Image (cartoon, rainbow, N blue to C red):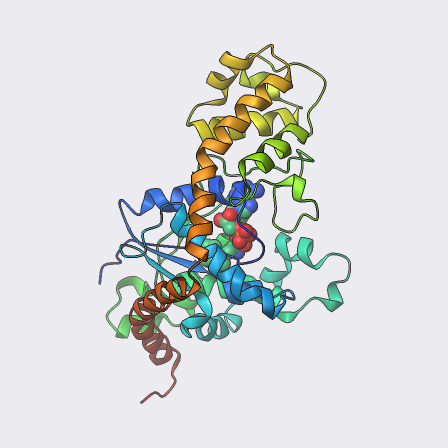
Length: 345
Ligand code: AMP
Ligand code: TRP
């Protein structure tokens, strides 16, 4: 049996999506729709690994769904749904809880960051988070996963889980007709968005993140033109003028980040941006950056607002996507159960 190429990726519905999500992942998601069968998920089960207010979660799920569509995701062509509507995710995650080793999870840097000092008090779900992520991908036997740089380690774990499952059950897998014990593919990270690591506007050494307490640290896809311009104007910089080539950005994280954002939004290289702005002060560069950002993000924000004004329509899109996702995942789950030696009727 040949493995078909299939794309899977997801984002958490916690807070609104920001420029890092957009440039690090979303732009690549949209691009891959042209060449691949794609499944894009709002990973609500991942979101609840840390406390979410139920009153806000539902809106956040709709908001992220709207942001996917507003950014160019076509829900007719690709499958778009929320994770909790397809039981295979949580179900396969249990199997992977039994495949992954404690030692593997102990190495995950995102858990260490998110759990912080009070590790004893982190949820078990937060610890097992990467197993659920592996299940998301492998429930569809997906082969390509477009993500930002920060997800690389989780993808490596997903590959280790796929390989251990294939090895542990090799005889059963081959008895089912899979050559070389290849039931689960080794999912490949696709880390090639226009900017795979966008940094905070307040601190060029920290990544732009939904969980940063300062809203000034990030540009949200739903920020209006005025807010975008104000955040860029307040962005941290250093006192030197801009260098005339990218090599001059070394050791200047804030300058590097802003030039990188400009380049990614305008579809240029950092060198060509600096050929234009080199030698200038940040104030004039920031004005141009705000224009480029507003030009690109303004229409997306407006479309998100339009789409979220009709929640029932968003729920219909998610229901349709979930039904299509289930038809792919259900037979794979049946095979997993056969392979492991369970009885099903
Ligand atoms: P999350 O918001 O953590 O669910 O991330 C969703 C996607 O956006 C993942 O593919 C991340 O790798 C990507 N992402 C999140 N933050 C950034 C960032 N600051 N720069 C680039 N990509 C990011
Ligand atoms: N862990 C990812 C993040 O925080 C989100 C995610 C969950 C994901 N499941 C996934 C990404 C499967 C790609 C594939 O960014």
